[in-house]
Length: 224
Length: 370
Figure 1 (tube, helix red, strand yellow):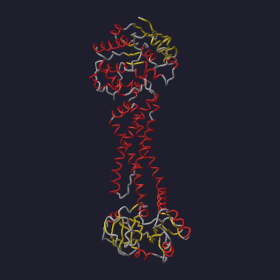
Figure 2: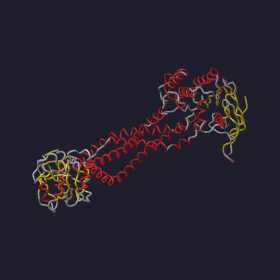
Figure 3: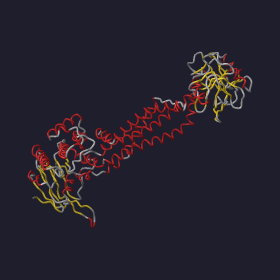
Figure 4: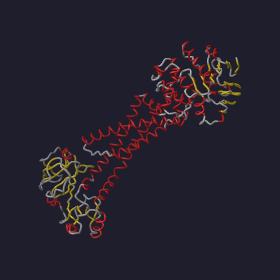
């Protein structure tokens, strides 16, 4: 069953001579438990597609459906709620909140969702333990290594058990070993919990664990 | 949202300190100014408030009991003394001379009293005695300090040659440039220009259960004089003084509120500017604009509460300094603190609205750009 479907997505930036077609009639389906890797050269439209799938960017045409919900039917007021419940984001630059400890960063999505503080703390603690960074729970992001930051960021993305994980170059700023561990975590999340994982990356190692690899070039998508 | 708000706020300690300082400054300005206002008004009516009276008899048509020529007839006072329910009547002669020092003039409001009756005269003495002779005077301790005089020294009124020995000092007897002083009734009689008259009189009732009614009864019977219930007179005096000073105070209050609001608003706004990327992250995760606004409100209110606590504590210190160094009465009441706190919270709420537009305009998609 498809968790997320994108049908005939077109996104154009600019007008006239500066017009750039970032996505040109792109369609993509991702099923539960599936890991899809989106590859392509810089400026090919990978991140644009990720933003459209993550409901952070409105396409000029086409439809995105998440768990059978057409996201374009939702108002701007309702979209944050959908992202909170259904989508977890993992960023290339980790994007942890600098004033919060590792554990508090992981707690954030649950706190936004209105879950009790004691429960969020417990759940965040468990997840950090599972990802091997429990000892760093009380540390601020500035005191964490790149690998630790990304594990915390992944824990934050996973804490609400979203049905989709969207990861933008999750291994780009990590060394080989840590990058491999991060890939393992994402793979397990898809396979053990039956979630959809979409990864934008140049990292060839991810090819090994991806169920499907799609290549995007000049805004057009093709299966590899 | 409290977690994010408080952590963001305390992360930038220097900015928080500036903001709390700004709010505290506004709070001190409000609390101390109103403390001086309340203290001055209370002190100004202290003479009437502390008088041994339920009813005050004034000259007909008189608004200020200390001004004008004494024209309350002693004959009327005697008649009132005979009225049923009247326990005692104390005639008072009031004078308004001045004393000078180093080309500076200090206004006195002198009231007469009978030193043999301990219930009359000043409410307390910080030094000296109430048992004064006709050549002696009781003056405010604050005035004595300004004149460089103490008990036993003498003073001479402007345009006069008579010398008065200072027999005692009265605390809390200076306000709004008036210095409440006392001489004997017999000494004051020498200043009377219309024989057998006094400035006003204090009436004590045997059963002061319905003073207002008794005042009305006496007024109906003696239309040639002005019979006033003491409590009402005190209130009128307070209102009259308030009407004179309140507009100035309100203007300063408005400035203080603007300063406080601007300081909190700028702090929250710059915090939002600095943390635009993190706001974008929160938006990508799924925080709503309403929740973001609540975070901003929480930050503003936390800043306000911290500024309020520091401001109130410092207000007592500043108030003490002003009353000690400048001899200004500062009365910081619970009510002043309560409404300044209320005003500060409103200030915080308004300030939290300043970054709302900026918060709403942050695009979460920007987070994906390196």
